[in-house]
Length: 233
Image (cartoon, rainbow, N blue to C red; front, side, top):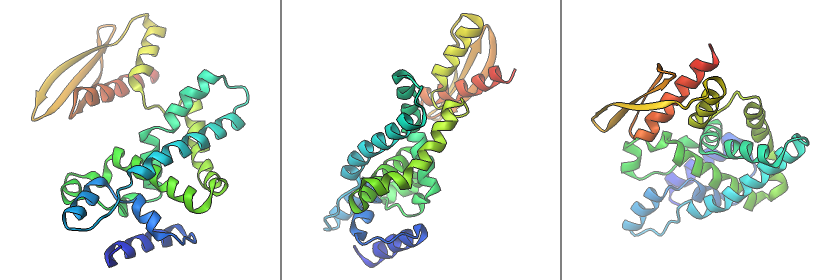
């Protein structure tokens, strides 16, 4: 690590108030592939967080499954799988990353930095998984589980109570079938400057509008608006 990298990681560890010996491991957890590639072009051999992310994904799954199994003894396998998918999702992991302020300590390539990568959910979620893997490798599974279980318990409760949804398209479909016995209808209203605007109709009535860089993203936002409109009245 150079001086800038070392000071950034030391600042991160101080903010966590942890005793950490392997600073290199935590540095690697914050290295996005764009930064690693730039550094390699400059003659430095730096590994990105992708391998740690791979390991962290498995550690997250185990912690979440342990939380669900112990917290909800009456839940079916199907229900636990559904909740696990939400709790271990990109959205929740990116929210956790922000709680730990990991966005402040990421090492990104110049292009990724300029394009807003520091606030991109996918990058933050990957960094969170890599960060959890670094904790696991340096402190063991018991400590890792103790540190992160409360976070996953919190999000599990919200999902179980229906207060936290990420797959709004599926949720909207299930709700419209329950109420009207029909499916929602999506319509691309405009496509301008690489942005899509999608409207969703239920029983002939416009219930939601969403915009996004892709049709899929716009549909998700329209579905969320429509779902909340149906739920609220």
